[in-house]
Image 1 (cartoon, rainbow, N blue to C red):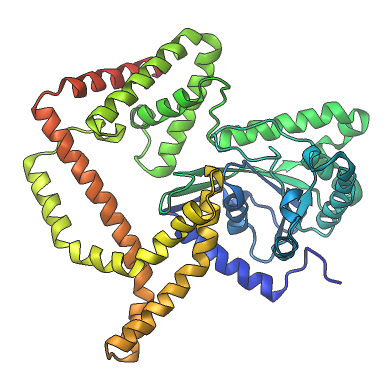
Image 2: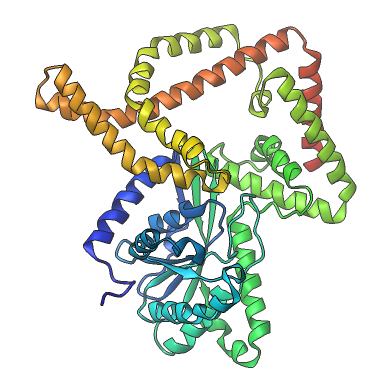
Length: 448
C-alpha cells in the first residue's frame, strides 16, 4: 500500500501543471525569502489562510520540487466519496472539528499520528495555524494542533534532523480577480527543538510561547489589520495612505514595497486604536464620507494621488489605445469563453457566495476549460483557414498571451477614462472633487 508522502509520477505531473498555471493566474508572482526553506529535514509550512485552496497551492509553488506537501483540511469536505478520492490523491488529510461531531474528534489522533510519521520520514506538512479561513486580511486565533504535531514529531525524531515550522505570509492583490498580484513571504524557520526542554517541564506554557512566536512572525510577513470593530476603516486607510507611506519611507514604487508600506500603516493603526481611539473614530467617519464622495464622482482613490494629465498626454494615450484596439479585439475573441466561463459557472451554476472561495473555483474550472477551448478554437482555425502547421501551432500558443494582453488593454482603458474624468472635474473646479481631496489629505495627516 502506498504512503501519502510517496511521490508518484501522476502526482508530479498534476502538481507541475497546477503550479505552472497558478503562477500565470496572477499578474505578478512574487516570492520573498525562498532561501529560508530548509531541505532534508521535517518541515511544517504554516501560512495565513484567507483564500481557500489557493493558499495551499501557493505553498506547493515554493516548496522543494522533490518534496510533496501534505495538507490538513476540514473533514466535512471528505464526505463525498469522489471528493475524498481526489483529496487523497492531492495529499490532503482530514482534520475533525467540534462541528463534525464530538464522536469524530477521536479520529484526529490517528490523523495526527500519520502527520508525525510524515515528519519522521523527513517530509513536509502544510498546516494553517488559524484552523479556519477568513476573508479579512488579519490573523485569527491559532489552534493548538500544529504545535502538538510539531512537539510529538520532535520527540519521536530525537537526534534526527530537527522539526522546523516555516511561517509563510501570503498577500493577494484581490481575492477573486484574475491578473492581480500574489506575494509569498517566507520567514525564518522556527526550531522546535529549542522549545523541547521547556515543553517537558510545562507543555501548556511552552505551547503558548511557540504559538506567540509564530504569530509574531506571521504578523511581520502578512498584512494584519488586527482590529475587531474598525476593519473597513483600517482597510480603507491602508489604501488611501499607501502611496504617501511609500514616499515617506523612501521605498521604490513597486508591488512588494507598496505591501511593506501597507504593513507600516496597519501597525500604526493598531497602535492608534490602543493609545488614541478617538482618532480612529475620526478616521472612520472620514473614510465613510470619502468613499461616498468618490462614488458621486465615479473615481477611485488612485486617481486623486496624481495630478491631472496634460492634454498632450491624454492625446498620446488615446492614440495608443485606439491603434492597439485590433490586438485587443483578437485577444478578446480568442479568450472570451476561456476567461469568462469559469466566472459564469461560479456565479450562476455553483452560486458561490463566499468570496474567499471565488479564486479557487475559477482557477479550478479554468485549468480544464482553458486548454479545451484553445484546442477547439485551434481546430476551428485550422478548418476555416488553410495554413501551414507552424501557423497552427503559433495560433494555439498565442491565444493565452493575447488574452492577458486584452485584459491589460481593458484595464488601461478604464484608467484612461478615469483620468479624463478627473481632468474634466479639475477644470470645472468640482466642489465634490475638492472636498474629496481635502478628506484624503486629512486621512493621511492623521495616520502619518
